[in-house]
Length: 139
Image 1 (cartoon, one colour):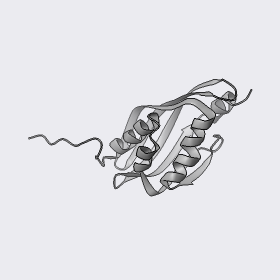
Image 2: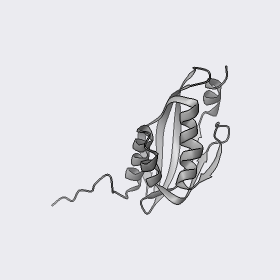
Image 3: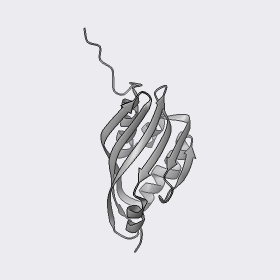
Image 4: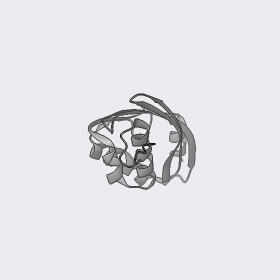
């Protein structure tokens, strides 16, 4: 007999990370916060407009996701490749959006490194070509 797991409750690291991307794409900040550990460390890369490390699920969504939504139209992270090694998940993805101030588009490749423990994301680190993002923000 083959046992199946429910994707919505799976604690498998790749499933937890995938739920985070789905919640983000749907603008469902509550569902996104549910994927994050209470003591999460979420690091946006130096040079990125929101550079820094944010803690707590609410800290992450208010300082990152809500600000991206305020400054960019249609901000999306399109995840396409997952590399899983135990609790570590690296995702290759693409950001697409239009900067509200300049009207310029971005379409830039990114890598996201996650650590998942106990069914929650405890650490995130972003790798992106920050110059392409900043160029879209410059008139």
